[in-house]
Length: 71
Image (cartoon, rainbow, N blue to C red; front, top):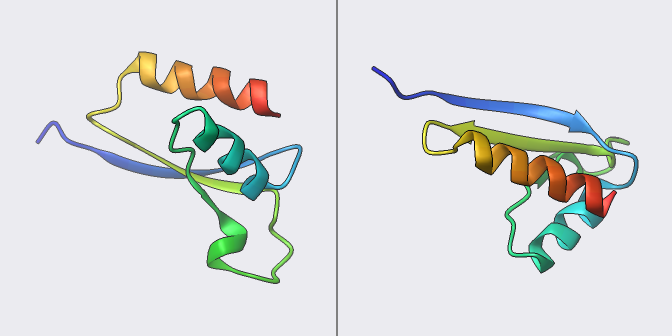
């Protein structure tokens, strides 16, 4: 089976919810803020991302570049 699915969490320099909103303004689905899954846990700067076999290296590079811009 050549398919894969990987989730990972990154720590941002600002609240993840803000970064997700700014990415959405650019038409980019930028993951899920961990604070949405665990409200009140003090994890506002964590962003849950996923990558599958349908994501290309260019897709991942575009997300990384967009994250740099919004941070």
